[in-house]
Amino acid sequence: MTNAYAYACRDCEGMEACPASVVAESKEEVWKLMELHARVAHDEDPADWDQATRDYLGTLIKPVTV
Ligand SMILES: [Zn+2]
Image (cartoon, rainbow, N blue to C red; front, side, top):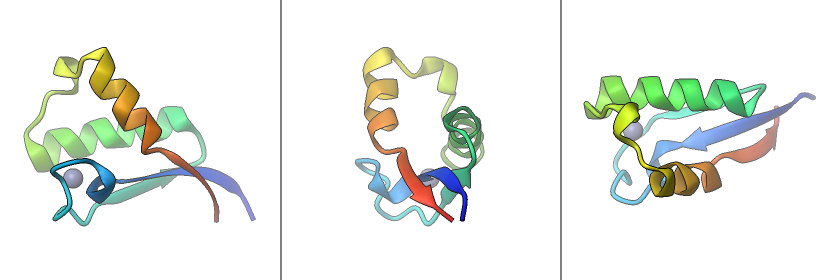
């Protein structure tokens, strides 16, 4: 059993149809994977995310045990 962090894109408002989720050992890694996913799947530039967006996305990262 390992403690990890997970993010499911469908939890994000407006992304209910997106099947992607990421899980990684650290929050930092989850953020990197989220940013990559946003870029590849949603054509978003994470550099454009303001603090409110990052705060909101941060609430969607959940601790999990895998
Ligand atoms: Zn997505």
